[in-house]
Length: 170
Image 1 (tube, rainbow, N blue to C red):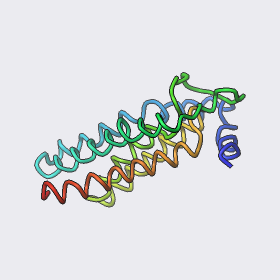
Image 2 (cartoon, rainbow, N blue to C red; image 1 turned 180 degrees about the horizontal axis):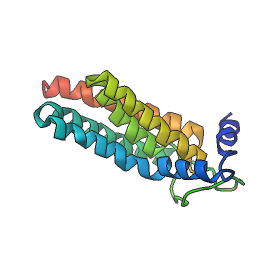
Image 3 (tube, rainbow, N blue to C red; image 1 turned 180 degrees about the vertical axis):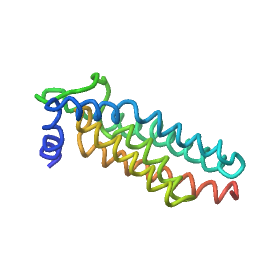
Image 4 (cartoon, one colour; image 1 turned 120 degrees about the vertical axis):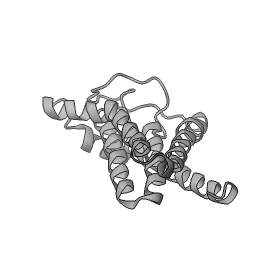
């Protein structure tokens, strides 16, 4: 099923210059805009949003640099471009594919933002989805990598919110 869904999405890569450019933008560069949007909360109202921004960054970092790396250590999985004939649009990454660190990071951010602000949170979930799906489109992740990364990110966001409420009384 994972292989089938991957090819369903990746089959369009390399066929349209505009679509490829958009995919590369979302897979590689849009992440910087998302972090910038998060930091904009601080510009709007530093006191009100500092807690949210810090919790979102802690959740994202926890998801990406701790939980994902532990899973990758025990469950290594080659990327789609290894031993498969696929349309690869971005530079090869020499590390395990499962789970997606990008999905974990941005779904972690989105979960915390959603907890405090539903409308902004939905927007951040859309951003996380776009980054993630275009990582499949460009050929660097399997759909299951994205799903697992999203679960890790959402769990990480939930955990950070629960722990800060319990221990920091925030």
